[in-house]
Image 1 (cartoon, rainbow, N blue to C red):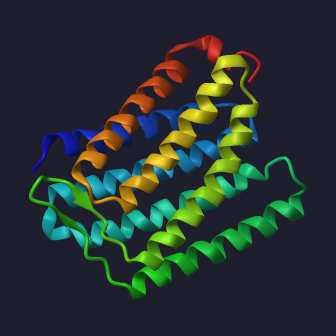
Image 2 (cartoon, rainbow, N blue to C red):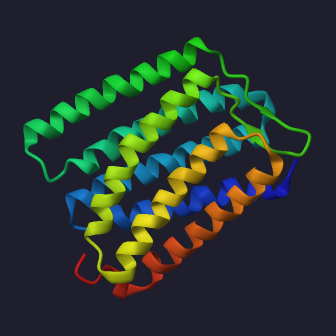
Image 3 (spheres, rainbow, N blue to C red):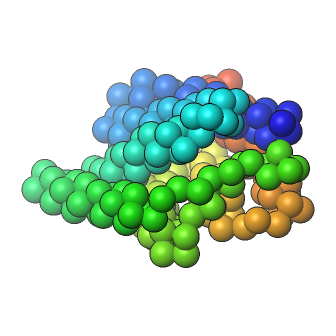
Length: 212
């Protein structure tokens, strides 16, 4: 078992949980919806961490974690359209639910063969079609939501939120698609470093929320 992999997943759980709680606690519908999405990500990473620690439950954990992750995409979509009319929000939500159900059932038709490599890396090992659907879903749901959330911050804090969370999205795509050990090490450090910058700023710097 690779201790760095365990620490990576645990840090992701804590980072997304505390950031999610911070956004959820704000008196703003955009922030609240984004916070729920982050909390669902925290739950997904916690379940996947359990699967790594208990390999006999890995495939079940991958499936349950995927459900939580896909649910987070629906809330990302809702975040992106919070400033739209109520009818638009409901239409996007319904379409989002239909899309993630489609992704789930396509993925379910291609049974998970997740595994832990000899180096201790955890691989979802998704098929090309399922990878494509997850990448499209993540990018189309998360990036517009991140852009709207970032627009509510000022100056350098807006830049940090926008490019910090986009970096996490891109790095997440790399984790799903790459099996190169060196690439995964670099990607893991990028994710960890960016999350430290995000929670270190948004949790402890009151000025970052000024005007938000």
